[in-house]
Length: 376
Image 1 (tube, one colour):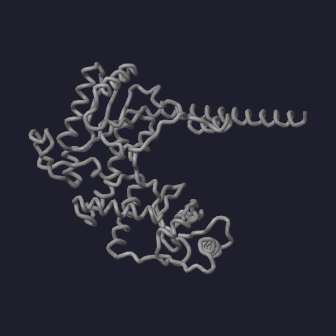
Image 2 (tube, one colour):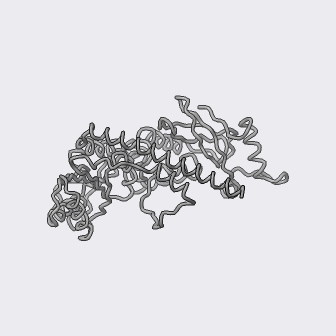
């Protein structure tokens, strides 16, 4: 892979200028002190190319000479690129490097974004870490190290458990119109004959499957454990208001509480008068056996363990990312009238063009007004 820095004549000059800015002339360079390096780091934007020749900007502020991971902004390919310069940090053990290479292969196969637990299960299946709590700790440690070193982008790991409440604001009307233009989408299901929803048991996994539901304009609900009566009631009322045949696809753990929670939620929807087809898509016993998914011992402290008729449990995180996304997509597309979908997308394209013309007209009129006021 080729790497070049933006704003510099050569890579060596880029690196030299950056290093000189970190240290005084009479100060000894200590490349093994991560805290010292972190306190003086300066991010640089590099242009890197995938095998198809697509350029992607990769911002990096870590040690020179390291191989970093990149996702092409054009074709989505995952590849590696070496940052110029000589690496002078601590050497990595072969066993550690093998784990990191395996993590890269996992992302190259599945693509971002994944949860820490999904990466752990993928490493356990490949026998790079044991299927124990210590194995999970090892996976988490490596993912932390890879992000601290800026080898792996932070955004490749999903975490939907942190969120904020803030009003939507803009720097001005022009920026608002640009954001509205970029965000505008026609309701893809307004003229479809059915309504589809995807429900997932875990917050973190919502970030993994959201790209699929977002593509098809399908609502994604996080139904953690045993949902409250209010949640079930509100969901039922919303379904009744839509007034279409509704299909709900649920994704959760294969364990006593996970399966029971899904069935309870199905019963609550029916109790409130919502007529919906509710189906558990994952995880099922057939999937565990067909894909040889990693399993865990049954938690005997679970109050529902006594009625569990299986010798193991399996977490949704154990399902390979590609399989999970494929299940979500197949659940959705089977209900789509593709001819109607194509008409909706054409109308959306025309409307976005109209919106763009309105935005340009507004900017032009505002600039003309500024010129007239300046003349007065």
